[in-house]
Length: 258
Image (cartoon, rainbow, N blue to C red; front, side, top):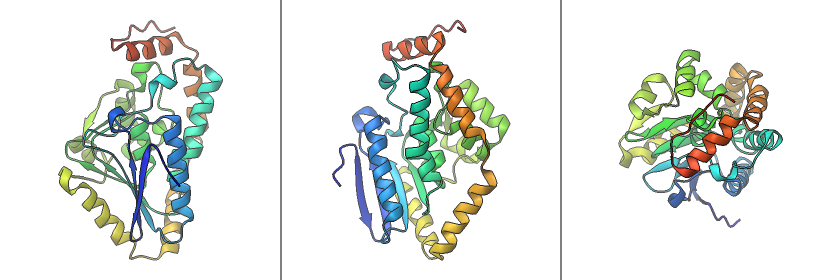
C-alpha cells in the first residue's frame, strides 16, 4: 500500500513504521491515524512480521501531539467520536496487538504523541527527548487513553501531577518515573529498540502473544469509556474554545472556568 504520511519498511522479521510529517513535527491528523491503522493491522496479520518499531521522522519530534486545527469547530459528539476513533483505530489497536511494539521516542512526545507511545508495549527514548500531556492548556483532557495508561505506568499521584500541570518531563525523569524503559544517546535509539525486540523474537511467538494478552488483562479497567465521554464534554466548554483559539493564535489562554 502507498502511504502519504508514514514510511513502512520491513527488515527481517521487524516492521519499521516512521511517522513522516517532519515539517508538522509529525503531528497526528486523521489521515495519519488512518494510515497507522492500516500499517499496524497489516503488521499484526502478516506472518513474516514478528514485531514493530515505531518512530518519528527527523530529530525534533516523535509526535508533537494531535493536529489541533482539526479540533477547532468540534462539539461534544464530534469530540466523543474523535476519541473513540483514536482508541479503536490506533492506541487500542496497538496496545491489544498480537505482536510486540516498541516506541523509539526520538524527540518531543506530547499529547496524542505520548498517548501513542504509551499504547506501545515498551518505550525507548533519546536522552534529549521530552514528554508530556499538555491537553489541559487547551481546555481538554487526554483522549486517546492517556489518563489510563499513564496512571498504570507511573502511579496515580505522578499521573495527576503530569496531567494537571501539563508539565513536560525529560527522558531522565521519564526513566525515573517508569514512563520509559530506557534512555539512550540519540544515535543508539533504534539500535536499543532492535536489541530488545530481537531478544523477544528468540522466544515463542505464541507465548509472547499470550503474555501480552495476560499483562493487558491485569491492567485493564473501565476507565477508557469514562475518558472518552469526559473528553467529549470538554468540547462544550468556553475554556476549550479559548484554549484552542489561543494555541492557534500563539498566545497564552485566558481561562474563566466556563
